[in-house]
Length: 251
Image: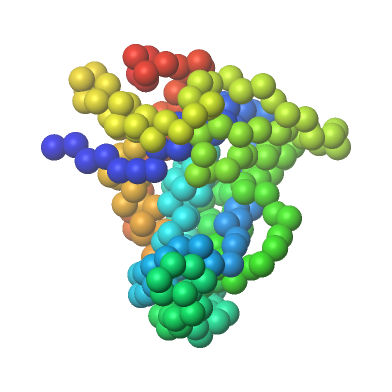
């Protein structure tokens, strides 16, 4: 039996271009990075938003699978997690639909932040929040010994990839991979079918998903315990796609 799991957005052209640049040494050795998913929650538009604020909800479990899976694609598995969690508001007020005006009791952290210590030595600061009105942070940036790489929204397949070498200005890099101009949410399944037929490891594998789940859960454990949490799972870095792949060329 083979187990695959979303997300598959890291297979998109924007993220595979970023992966190629790292693999080719465009920033040399990755040292550090940042990842931000910040907003003020979903009660202003979602007609039934209570599940976002129930136990097991919150910004980390809602959106960070996209961010963390992409970071594993770029940098490999995480060895240790240092986390801190807070809850900015005890209640949320529904702002649309038939439940408008109803109060929701918040039962989960709504601001989760911390450090990921990757097995390759890189350290990435991650913040996910439902407590932020406005900000100017980018989605993901990776900093290496010879430059910096700006990675697009990990919830999308495309987007601009920018590179700055040392003190040179940041410039957009032409995308070297396909699947960047649409919402290819079937891409991981297509790649899975090709992998099964070819007898090779899955890119969107259960091992990657389990590792990302352990990392997400470690943020809360670390915040509650006030100490660094070592991860026990490891996964292989998903194989990069060849440039300009099409659905029939996902090997």
